[in-house]
Length: 587
Image 1 (tube, rainbow, N blue to C red):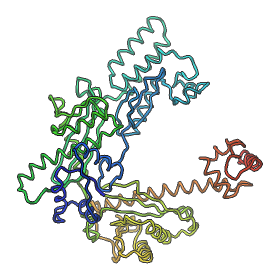
Image 2 (image 1 turned 120 degrees about the vertical axis):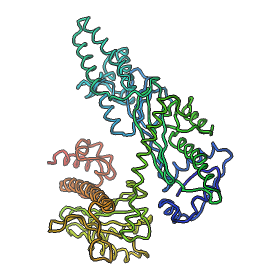
Image 3 (image 1 turned 90 degrees about the vertical axis):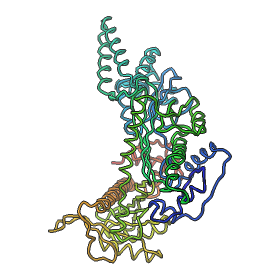
Image 4 (image 1 turned 180 degrees about the vertical axis):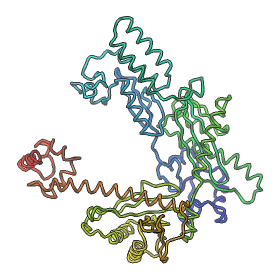
C-alpha cells in the first residue's frame, strides 16, 4: 500500500498514529485499509535509497502517487556511430555512443518537433534492419523528405554536414546555425549554383520559422536541472526546470501530502527544526533517486534549493550516468533566479493541487468521510444496439485511467433498457471484486439509483455503496441547472449553480459520458465490420473470428495470399483458396 524510507523509524511511524482530525484525508484512507507494518533494515543509507526506489517501481503502491511508474521522458536519439545517422524518439538512455537531446515532458510536442526536423533536414527514417535490406528508395525520398542513402549513392560528407546542422538545431544554437546557412548560401551564389543557394535559403527561412524562441537563461551553455520547493504543513511540491545548452527547455512538477507533525513528545521549535532539516533532506534524497532512474537522462549539474549532506545520492547518480554529477546549491545570480522561478512554479502547482472538494462533497451528500475512490458509470447505446456501460475512477485527487473499464452487453441488443444495463453492470462489477468505491456516481436520476441499489442488495453486498445520481437540466421552465439526487430523498439536493461540489460532479459525469460513448462507437464499428465480413458467402462467425484474430482490418485480409490464409489454424489449401476468392471479390 505504501513504501517509505526513514532514518528514524519511530518518529516516522508516530506521525501516522495521531488523532484523525490531525491527519490528511489520504492518510486517514490509507490507515483505514492498512493491516500491518513491515520493515526492511539495510546496512547503509545508500542501500535504503535504492531499495525504496526499486520497491515503488515493482509494487506501484496505491498511496505512493508520485513517481511510481517507470515511464521515462521522451528524448531525441541521434546514432552518430553509423555513416548515415537516424533521428528517433526514445525513452531510454543507452551508453552506445549516441547523442540524446531533451527531455520532452509531452510526447506529442516531441513528435511535432521531430516532424519539423524531418521537414527541414531529409534524414533517413527507416530502422537499421530495413536500411540494410532495402533495394529501392521509400516514399519519403520521392516526396523530397529523405536523401535515400538506403539505395542511392549519397555522399557521406554531405550527409555528415546535414547531421551537424541537425545537432545545431536541436541544441538551440540558432545563431550559429543561421550564420552557417547564410555563409553556405552566399558561397553557392558566388559559384553560380543558384539552385543549391535557393535550397539553403529555404532551409534558413524554415529554421527561423520553426525553431522555438527559447529564452537564454545561462550564458555558459551547460546542461543542468534546477529544482524548486514549495510547501506548507500538509503538502509539498517540487518543480524541475530542464535547462539545455543554457536555454530553458521544459519543466515538470510533482506534489504530494506529507505527515503534518512529528513526535508528540517534542516541543514545537524542535518539530519545526526537524521539518526544515531532516524531513526535507529525506524528501529530496528519495525524490532524486526515484526521478533519475537508471535509463533516465541525467545532466552533469543538478541545482538544488538547499545543499544535501548525503553523499550516497550523488554516488548513485554518478553510477547511473557513467560520468560526473554535481549536486549543489545555486551559485550566482542567474542560477538563484532559476531556483526562485522553479519555487514559484512549485507554489503554483501546490495551489492547484490543494483545492480538494471531497470533504465538502461528503458533507453535501451525507457521507461518513471524504471519498478516496469515486467511480462513475454511464450507459451508452445507439437505438438499443451495441449497449456499453462505461466506468471511470477518480482516486486521491486524479483520474485513474488505468482503472477505467467498459462492459459490453450483447444480450441486450434492441432492448433500449438503461435500467437493465445498469443492473447487469452491477453484477459484473461486484464479481470483479475490490477495491470498492467510497462513492458511486450514476448518470441518471432516482430510477437509475433505485435499480443499482436493488442490484447491489441482490448481489449480496453487505453495506450498500454510497451513491449519487446527476441528471442534465431539461428544457422545461425552471430547469436551468443539473440536478443531483441521493437514495432515500425524493427532491434533488439544493446545490448552488456553479458551486465547487456541483462542478466536480458535472466534471465526473462528462468524463464518464465521453468514455462510454467512445467505447460504444468502437464496439459499433467492430460490429459493422463483423457483419460485413459475416455476410459473405462461405464465411461464418467462426471463420470471421479467426480472420479478425490474425489481421488488423479487412484490407489486410484482402492483401493476404492463399499461402498466408492456409497457415491459419483449421484452414487447408482448398478452403484457403475459396476464402481468398471470396475476399478478392467482396463489394
